[in-house]
Amino acid sequence: TPGAIVKGMVTVSAEASDDNGVQTVQLAIRGVYQGELAAPPYEWTFDADTYSGEFEVEVTAIDVANNQTKVEFGVQVNGMPQVQITDPGDGETVSEVATIRAEITDDGEVEAVIYYVDGVEVGADKVAPYRLNWDTCDYPNGTYLVEALAIDDAGQEATDSIYLTVDQQLSLEIDEPSGLAEPMQDLVALVTDDQGIVSVTFTVDGTDIATLNAGTAAP
Image (cartoon, rainbow, N blue to C red):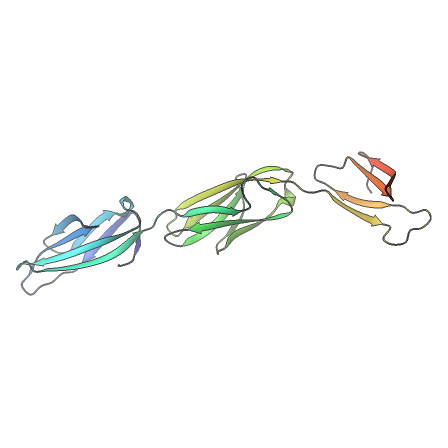
C-alpha cells in the first residue's frame, strides 16, 4: 500500500493484464532491480529491516510488444522509537512530588511509556505529554535510577535513564500557642524529617530558652 509503514518481511503484490499478453513483471527497490516474474501471482517478499527511512518501490509490467507500464509508491520502515527524559535533568535533586517528563518520537504510534525507579515499575502514561508524578515521600533520602521505557505499536522498545537524588526537607511547625500566650505556656513544635531529629531549640527574641535533644519523646 502506498505510504505504508512496514517492518520485517514484507510482501509486494501486483496485478497485470494486457490485450496481447504480459511478458514479465519486474520489481525494483530504490531503483535497484530485485527480480521479475513471467506469470501470476506477481508477488515478491523482501526484508524491510535492511532499509531505513522512506524508500521507493517500483513495479514495471512489460507486454509481449515490449510496452512498459510502471507504478511507483513510497513506503517507510517502522524504526525504533526514540525516548528522552527531558525533565528533571540528570543528577538533579527532588523532593515531595516530582514530575518526570519524557519526549518520544517514532515512525508509528506510541503505545505507552512505562516509568521505573531502581528497576521497579512506578507508573505509566499512554497519552502525550508522557509524564509521571513521582511521590518521593515514600523513599528515603538517596540517589535513584529513574528509567522511561517507550513501546511502539510494533512492539519495539527503547529506554532512557537518569539519576535523581531524593532530599526531603526538614519540616517545622509551631503548634502551640496559636495566639496570645498564658503566663505559663507550653510551647509545642511539630517536626518531621526522614533522617530523624537531632534536637529542637526554642528561641524568644533571639535568646535560646530551651533545647530538646534526640531521645526526647515528642511532642
